[in-house]
Image (cartoon, rainbow, N blue to C red; front, side, top):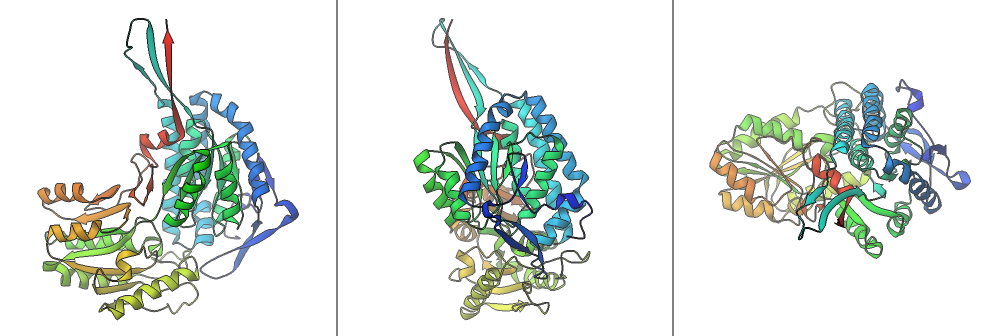
Length: 484
């Protein structure tokens, strides 16, 4: 971590009740750089006991934080957001070192994360209730909104900074306190944000960070606790289902942002160059390791060959390398399992008639680098049609009619993000309404911003993050029926 200017941002202890602490017994685990395999440092390997300590700390801090005037909470959150911008370069460098994505992407993520905190700070001032017309002259009906309480949060490795602020921002703005378990692959981004929260003056116990490799034990404490009233999770659908089931006994509020299988549709009237640019930005961001990235690229018959040629050339020209290099477009994947999955899907596609037109093998850099790969002639019977890839593999599917592509695009249990390119306004309206997804990008892949809702349909999740709707996930409604 020598590249980080402010060394105090690199913490090798967890953060519980305003103190930097080790695991009981001093157990630790290594955190490595996926681009080099070098060990960056160690963090505490915590489990159930430390999580229980964090829950108690969050519960003790909740009354004072809840009762703080909204403007005061907003001021602290704005200061936290401003510190994130002030230390943007260091936050991005920490993120790239532990996660692998190009530094320019890491900076964009850190900036986006600050934006979520700033937006939610303002939303804290706008938690409005209602006065409803009474049923008779003797009563008044009021609806209040109040914070749900202690929130347990579990965040992934692919966006280790913005996922935290996107969850903590609305929770803290609503008046809730937080126990956060970051991915064991990328804990340093979380700990750096805790340092800045401490500097911003956010009181002890309001934010607690528990690091550990035993995610099941930590998660079980959070789901079983009567004190924890809300769980927010971003990760795989399989784990999300398990957490949801575990929350049933205590009937918690749940927000889940789960897997995706995003269609990227290019119609024959599209601006092909713009579509190529959008497909690359969506598919290969973070080496294809995003839940909203283009997983299945559908191209209409009339332009299929032209699009495939342009897209393949542009993909082949992308530079793969260390995320710290200024000219890097694609970094490594996070772990060997990602390469194994890409390889399995690729071999399956080749056995069913798919043609590799660029890439298709491990990169000469070795380790966790895998060539950006394009397959033409992809068909719905291939694994890459039904499975989320989460790697640098782009299959191109051919379609004939609007009806055909809608059927294929919606033929999945997932419904997070979808994209399509067309210049026909009638088609644009029809497609935007027909696609069964929580977010639809039209001639654009920019579907993420603090002011708009982020969330999926079907097995892609429950609830949303961002926007004025996102803060409602951390509020309870209370009727006050008053006789006057």
